[in-house]
Length: 92
Image (tube, rainbow, N blue to C red):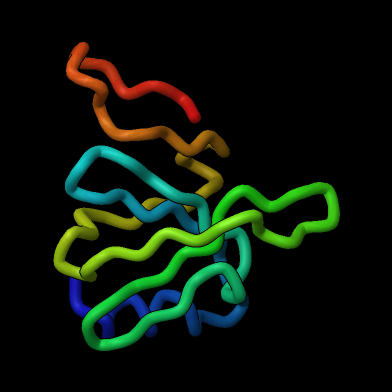
């Protein structure tokens, strides 16, 4: 997915939370624009917000590995890890 397309999605007013799906089968919630940083070559996503809504860590990926975006209202609120070889993604 192009960085420009992601930036357009993040800048929608009002912002609509969404889920980012990656080519390895993992996915991450973007509940607020502050949870994603977009550059030409890398996307950074803040994950695992604690009780104080401060993320515990971040993941990064090449934007080419983003396979689709999905509104959170339709996607549910569970992040999944990549397939562990069993043919099933496991919740993380």
